[in-house]
Length: 97
Image (cartoon, rainbow, N blue to C red; front, side, top):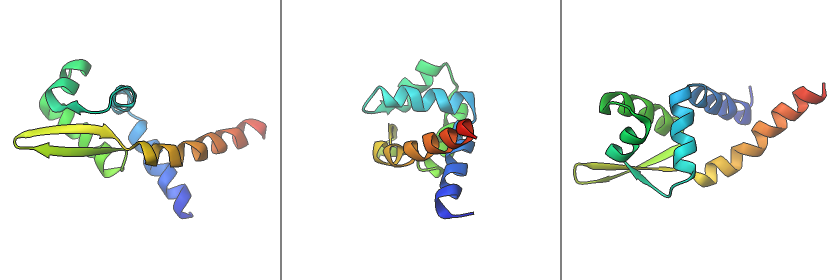
């Protein structure tokens, strides 16, 4: 598997969960969201939010900024812009087959 395919698998795994997909969609509409704000918007407990944001962070889909005891999340837009065409290309190839 080449590096681009490995990256796509990583992204697909991270976005394959409904909660994480909802997080990414919400963060795509906002510059940045605090932990409490994101948890409230998605009706999640803090531990559940932490679990999902850790996966998104490890998958390099979001960045986390710490300010004292607070954590703020933002979408890694440059990375999304880089892998989104590859996702579409993969799907296009499958559709045309």
